[in-house]
Amino acid sequence: MKLSGKGKIYCYTTISRGGSPPEFSTQQNLVGSYCVAVVELDEGPKVVAQMANSKSEELKIGSPVEATFRRIYEDDGMIRYGVKFTPIRTAKP
Image (cartoon, rainbow, N blue to C red; front, side, top):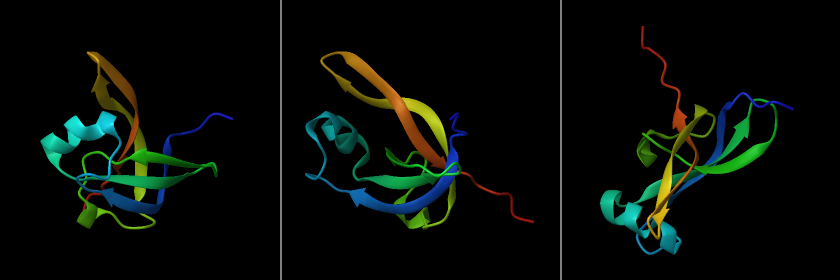
């Protein structure tokens, strides 16, 4: 099955200082806390991923999101890339 990369936030949490795995310590030092969501894709499966370009107060269960290819973290001089999700913002009338 080919996935569209679009879905909605099923649930989410904020990872604060001291709560993240060691490979995310640099990110946490740079930006502080960050959000992780369970995203229900339009095709049905649920995936866990970091949220990008968003603050926890902007996120809501059921909000539409889409997958984006992003830098995840750097370890031993190697940059790791993967999927994060960003909110789909709709234009206000």
